[in-house]
Image (cartoon, rainbow, N blue to C red):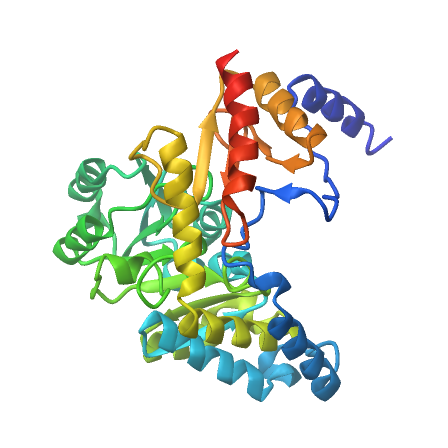
Length: 369
């Protein structure tokens, strides 16, 4: 039988406790697994924008942007993203994963070098592999190691791309962009950053970590529309000439059906709210500081993502199940997604302090035991 090997591999996954399954989260549960940082995914204004777009344009874009899928909504969204990110232009993709998967191979190839943070997201890792470039990973957040790799290898390659998340989705920590761009300038490198967990969350205008760290180096900024923005899709933002180039060289944009009218319109409304209602960000950060205080004001927690490390996979799964039984979704994250098992708490503006107290009291009691 050609697929008999699957039974064996399923058993291996089960024994290692690596087998994944999806859960439908009841609506009355308190959800600490969501990346809807500002609570916009259920905002009535995004819903209405999506409904109006469906009534005007239909349910699907019906084709790629170059073939038949272009709508005025797409151009409007790209203008809004560029304004939010403080760049000349932007390009919208059907998902953030597709953006990274396609843009990296468009920037570098077989004669080039990529230096990537060891904890980068899967979409960055896969994009690097698809490029055909030599990929070297530097230790997580370690610019000394990055400098060492540049000194040892940069001169042997035509182009060099440094790739990093700004906020790391499983660790919740932040890339040292100022140091990275100093090295990039010194060694004549491009820098691509993924702001998926930063856009809408960080900065006075919600632009992201690039705004907070006041980076003026010409970056390639990628991100998603599905987290704080509350919709679906991805983007890349930067210089206008770069966007023009990517339209002709990025396969995941050229050959993919355009983002649906509903998702595009919802994202437009989400960015508008991010730009005009900073109080949502204030509420989110109030929650972040509150949980930090409960944890003993641990300074390593610098974002809405709180990884609570545990000793092994069974402990993580048990704690997650205990929370589930109390009407709380607190996901267990385990290898191979992360090197160390953990409960990953993701805070949003919709959480109350009572919600945070509930999950913390439950986890703290069992972790102490």
